[in-house]
Image (tube, rainbow, N blue to C red; front, side):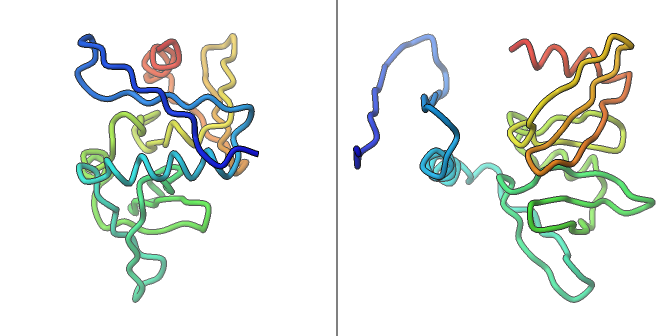
Length: 154
C-alpha cells in the first residue's frame, strides 16, 4: 500500500486560480482528508459560520460540514451531519458569507452545499429533486431549475 499521495503540478497560464482534481477509485477516508486539508488551506476567505444548537450554546460550523441552509418559519436553519442549528441572520446575509463555488441557492428558502449532493433527479415535468449524502431530500424551485441545470453541465 502506498503511503504517499501522487501529486502532479502543471503550470499553465490559462488558469487564474489554482485548480485541484483528485483521482481515486472511490471516495474514502483518505480522499476526505485530502479535501479537508485543501479546504483548510484556502478557508481564510470563507470563515466558519456561528450557529446555535440551543439557546445557550454557540458553535462555529465549518462550511465544509454544512449540508444545507433553509428557512423554517421565521428562523434560518443550518443542517450538518451532526444536526440542525439556528443562525441569527437572514438567508440572504448567510448566502453572502458562504463560498459561492460550493453553495447554490435552489429556492427562495434554501441554499445547498453542492459537494454534499448524492444525486439529482431531473423529471420530465421540469422539477429537480435533490438527495443529499445523508439521505435528506429537497427540491429546486421552478424558477431555479434552469440555473441548477446550467451548473450541472459545467
